[in-house]
Image (cartoon, rainbow, N blue to C red; front, side, top):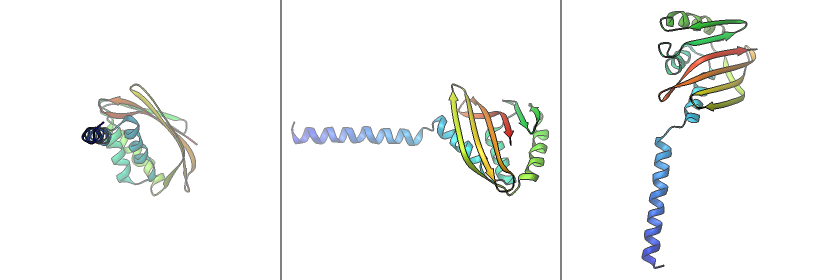
Length: 150
């Protein structure tokens, strides 16, 4: 093969590689989206972070939300955003300032459904196991169920 052919081949391979890198940088996978979810629900608990997570991952007009914690299970539907907000504020009073550290995690995606499980530790509350079930809504994932166990 001539030198010119090698240069052309190298240039073509470089373009293919650059295209693959650009595609990877522009296309967000489900796993990457759900990693953002985990980042949103761990770390320091503040009112702003809770509100941000709710705005990104909860939309009662599109997906009802079941919350099961400490032996109580509640279902929130469209029109019950204020009740969910009040419950979140109540929970925030006991968790405010806590730093939720991830001890272990699981992620399973099956079609339009995903489960994220976390074993969390906080100095203030000890260890908890939390599981979120999410459903795909177009390009987004919405929380359908939150379960908390100590």
